[in-house]
Image (cartoon, rainbow, N blue to C red; front, side):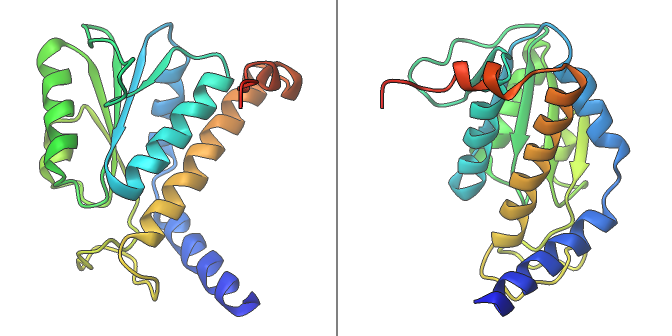
Length: 183
């Protein structure tokens, strides 16, 4: 198993070395505004989106996972973070397009800066990891489907949360106080 873990970490490291770090600064700047945040994704990318939303909630941000029954309507000035490896997931594009139409800032995480999702976004963070489509611009992977993209999204979003918590001096104790206590 150590060999497989090493392969995964090596693949992820290769992706992170190819990324433009400046775009994460733009995302962090958007998180530091007093705005509502809506995060959307489908499939495993949707799980990564919900994990990111959960951690942002623990950090005290006003965040919602699109598709949940308690998610309110979007309005002008909100931030939408859309996650789709291919950038062609119709439901994610639909939310991003609706957000842009309403006057939301749309930030996407995808492998494809020429995708339909990228085209409706204000900011695009390209994560050049392999997806199920195995396109030329994607980093190669021995892992199935979009595992590499989803792993990179998860780690990247955790790094964004870590940066936010350190910069805003948010302690473990404060985040823990927001952790669910009804499970």
